[in-house]
Length: 375
Image (cartoon, rainbow, N blue to C red; front, side, top):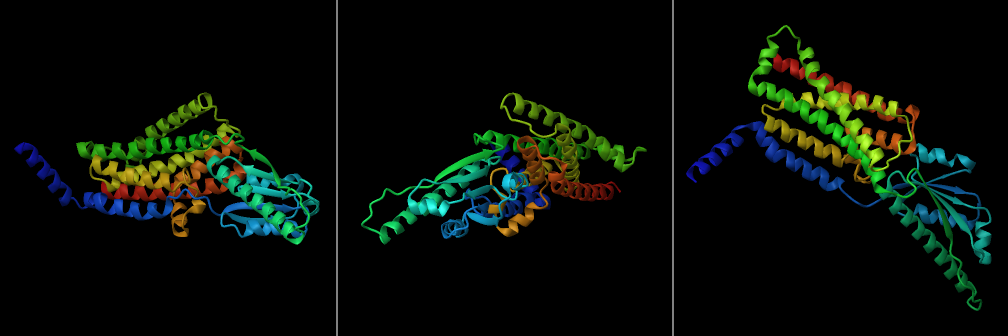
């Protein structure tokens, strides 16, 4: 028992003597607590709602006002685009589209049944289902209030109220299966773990065993050592992604609507960023334990601020700015776009551009730090 106590005392002394370990144990959890405490929420707010008013009466304008004054929606009213509504949903400019038909107001006045068409982007099944519930509730409340107003104006007339009957069409994920939404995100996380964690641990292990110094005195240049350490894990990451994608398609029946070659090309840009993070972690950590803690810290932040579970639009503005430098955010969006919507390079160019900027900057900075430590 005395030996165990001595061992515990020794480990505690090592922790408190290591400034990096103190930061990992105390400062990083506090940072996570503050950031994630504000960011993690299951509420669905500020849903982009597209309204096409084909009636142009006071009744249709009243319905639009109901949506506009609802905290769950941000209304974007446009002219009638005909069959071009889909491009707004495909571009991500709206999650929900409400089409008010002609003679909407007249039907309400005469008590005839009327239909309001609802178009929904179902690629995010959780947000789509909740937003649809909010939309239907708003429609029924509007209809009930109109019926009550009509009865107040003419109480002697007994008429059964006619409620609006929404006609819903869900695109990209018609059955609102959450697995369609989650699997592309999980694939991105697996790729992150393989490339970032293993790269960092491998380089730190070389330093711990003393073999990294032996490599540095060889004719190999530092950038060659980095390439030799990162390329194998890039290959493992690609193989892991191919395996996970195959399982997702064959076992979970996830559709791949888009181009697989484009997905592979964009995956390489994401791997550039995660490999750079792995090299950067290896320059920050002195031991494998430190590397593991630092990687887990970044991984938690990346996952919870990536939009995998919680819409980024629901987060405070300051936290949304932090997500701009999160590579996982862009790659999850790329995966979902290619898997479910079949988006092309023109649609995915903003995500690709962000990944390239992050990857080049992180890899360049990590390489400079590695050169400095090697020198």
